[in-house]
Length: 178
Image 1 (cartoon, rainbow, N blue to C red):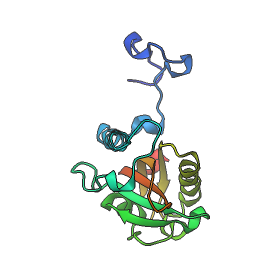
Image 2 (image 1 turned 90 degrees about the vertical axis):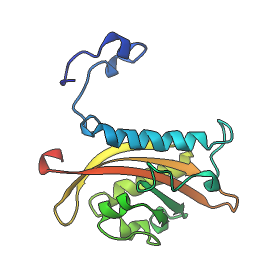
Image 3 (image 1 turned 135 degrees about the horizontal axis):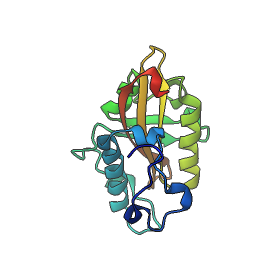
Image 4 (image 1 turned 45 degrees about the horizontal axis):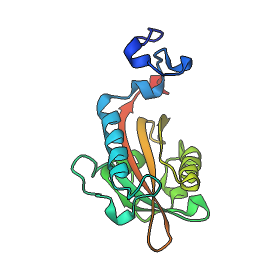
């Protein structure tokens, strides 16, 4: 749908006036496959919740879900968000970071172009105890532009640890995408 084109009435029913026009935001420029992965991850998280008011237990998440396996990652949250560790990582996060991140602190494993924003985003999801999703772009140190969508979903754990489940999808972009 071109920028500024009116959204059809059946799609706009009940939406605030500010949502009634299509835009060329980064989220709109991502591909359907990327959106489908994030929606599937959120649906899987939701299906693992014992009740609407409870977080899913870490053991109930299927990290080997056929569609989501390469996109999932788990972060163990520490009091200082930068000290938090990546405990599990599919190939997508490794590809975005350009190196292996399992067992690494977030402050040293995330690319410099997104580290500060990502730490704030993860901290907010942990503090709120609610799932969050975003899409953004950044340029890695090697010059490659990465466009990605991400969902962060809090998990309950029997041993009192704060865990976050992440699902990420990406594609390579150009400087025009920044």
